[in-house]
Picture 1: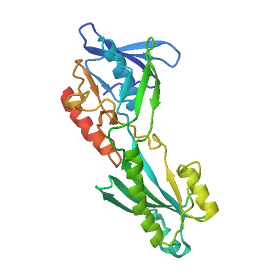
Picture 2: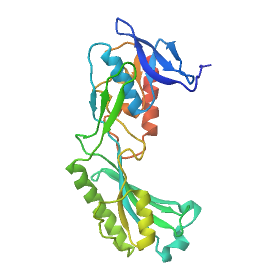
Picture 3: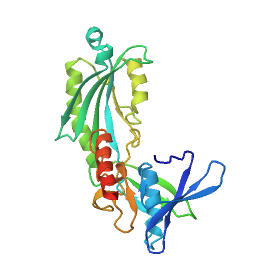
Picture 4: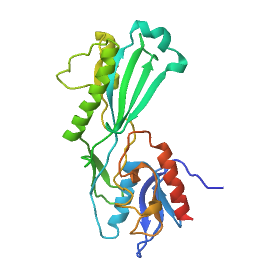
Length: 275
C-alpha cells in the first residue's frame, strides 16, 4: 500500500551532483522540514506549482529560467439572460438544468446552454462558450529566485486574435438570443462583466448581458512544461533522470473542453514510462 502523508508543502526537489532527481524537501505543519527520498518523482501539484518545482530543479543544473511563457487557460464567455416565461414550464426541470451542447471546430469552442435556478429569484438562461485561446499565448509565469522556494507572478492577457475569435462566437450566440426575442444590454463602459455580475445585471435589467470570465476562472491553467517542448514522451524530463510531470502543465494547449480525461490518459502513459 502506498504511504500518503498529508499537510506538507513541497519546497524543492533534491538534485544529485550527477543531475538525477532522488526526492524532495517538504515543510511540515509545525514549521520543520523533512526530506523524502524516491527513485522517481512525479510532479502532480497543478500547473503553477509544477512549473515552480521544475524551474527550481532545472536551475540546480546551471540553466536558470525565470520566465515561463505558454501558460494558458480555457476562455469562457457568453450571455446571461432572464429565461422567457413561455419557456419556463418546459425548460426548468431537474433533468433540464443542462439543455444542449455543440462543438464548432471552426470557432474553436464548445457552445453550452444552461439554466440557473439555484439562489436566483427567477431562472436565468446561460448561453456560453468554452473556447481555446489563440496561439501564440500571451500568458506566462515569472519567478523571482529565492533561497529554496521561489515566488511567482502570473502575467495574463489576451491577444487581438482572441478578441476577434470571441466576437465571431458571440455573433453566433446573438442569433440564438434573437430567436428567443431576448434583447441585449448595451455594452458597459467598463467592458463585459464576469459571470456572477452578469447574472445580477440580467435580473435587474431583464436583458441579455454579455460576460467574459477572467483567465484562471475555470481553474484549468495549463501549459508551460509542454510535452514536446520541455518533456519527452511519458512526461519525462529529458535533462534529469527520475523526474516526471503529470497534469495539465504538460498540455501544449488547453483545448476547448474539460481536461480530466486527457489528464488521466497522459497519467497512464507516465505510469508506464516510470515502470
